[in-house]
Length: 183
Image 1: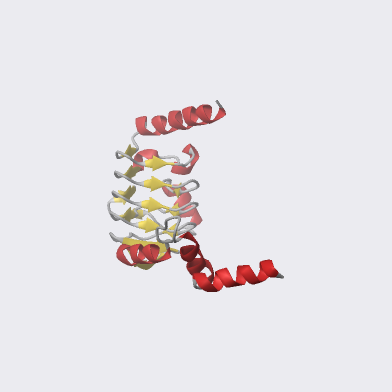
Image 2 (image 1 turned 45 degrees about the vertical axis):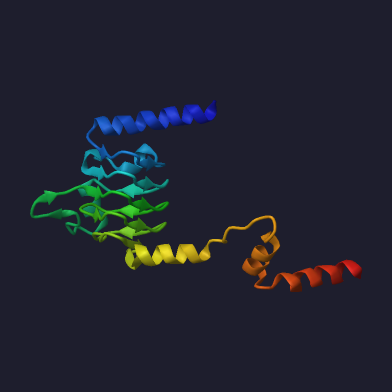
């Protein structure tokens, strides 16, 4: 019941922001609180199939940005103040901060705790404060595939787990277990 109440309140807040002009694409998951979208949510555009983790902050108020940058016009250019654009298939990690006038390209990954002050190119992974490119999406996929435990059945379960966690062969592990049981 409490979970339903939370989603009802969360959904109502998101709907209020959508009614105020924020644009969100289809199949986008938003785990943020309403306050994290700044005071001008109409300046935020989020594409399809994105994931916005909890604590991601969208800075949309130019006066706040100007005062926090020591009077510099960060976020205000010749065209005036522009919003934040998150293209399709992006992932924004927990507690990231997105500055105004930032465009996050399609298929980009923003690491947890990153402070994004510049545009992010498509198919890039960025992290840090300020955010920097760490790798391409293809390299990230390759690393993830290597770190996943391969599939196992009931017959090869012991071998797969011992190779993954202890880098031992099954026979060595079995002998060690037998020796410890005998003692």
